[in-house]
Image 1 (tube, helix red, strand yellow):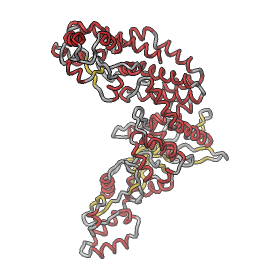
Image 2: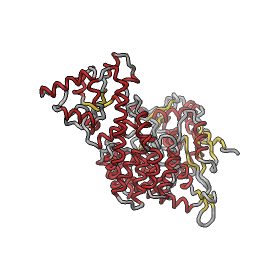
Image 3: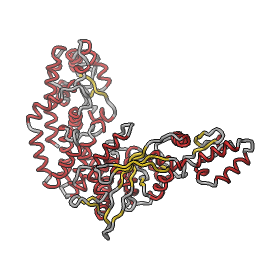
Length: 594
């Protein structure tokens, strides 16, 4: 079966399709990221007759309307947006949305004597040999423009200039290739075609397709919904971007959707800064009880999964449902309460959450359980445990979409506590805590999810830093404290151990830098001798700990075996084994306390 057609079209034809909506370029599917010099170079390539590549469009399926008639689908541009936007800016003189979401014009100047293009600048505006804006020339009266040019430049070679003018205004007559993908292709096939055709090897995610579908559907308010998603994600990272929206998108600021994201202008929380992929995934899964974004694209196209036809009513219903999901996601109360629950589990910093998919699904669970009317106290416990469970088991690290799809369907069909208990019994048995988890802690990767859960457990327990009297682990994490080695790194290196041996999770603790400096490169039995002396002499030589009980308590909360106080180089491997077991035990007690 032919999956696509390839045709050459005049640039003016492509631009006419864009103006009429036959080709849909979502307003802010992607901001225009080309700098002006790339637009200039594109114009020069077209002027010189050089090829400028293909653009790829995927025709929407024909949709059955309520009266039974068919509405022919538009072409949605999925590759080549920057080039087409550059053409509309330079040739038609239209505004573009730049990287800071401002509406700007890109004006390209042309020197017909040198046949050279340049980005308009103050010097060019003062130079009479330049045409200051090629869009005015291409769309204007050529005879009048030529007469005016010769009047202020009487000494030029008129034949040469007329030829240059002719070549310039014929740029829209140049051809560009359009690859049109069949409407009955599924997203996976379209993605594969895109990757194979795109020489830069750019990966187009299914979220990109979903965003294109959303933004292109102005009849169902998709363009505003797409803006809401984009602006929310931008504001979550940079609250001062609020002023850009107010200054440059007056129409959107009048919408109810804008009112719902205004709270971000004073929000500086960075624990969870979702991108559009995260937001659309959570909104979709929580409302549609499906985990595969390809299904969202199909539903927004009006697909009836039973009859395999496309219907307008399904499009309208899908947009209403998706908008509800987006509203739930961006709701200030929902978002802040969810983050409070995450923090209450000890995850107080984004550096403790390496899996975006784990926190995404935890938010899905929160929104779903809230919608189902589950008791708020129970929701808090469920969210904490599901988040930690999914991090410990790497549940969403392999095939997240399949896991999302499976989990949301289970949650929709049975009580959540029943499903959670099934997962715990199957994957968090005693064998996991006593054998599998200690083995997983045998790694040198400081960003390991297991180590992050251990640190969250310490935060939850209000543990103090190693050898600290008052400074909490939470303070050291939040205020950029440092991870140091219980067996000092230089000490182990001096005895011939390589990086993978001395950089072991079981050898890591959060420790105040000033304490670490006093420990230096001494062996544990040597630096603990100093600590014992300070306790005997009532002097603070290494830390603020002044009683033996304080020392024992500090070792216990940091899961440091007391045997460390007598250890030297020959005891290192035994120490690692002992500490891994203590860490795993603490994590087990932590999990079941959630």
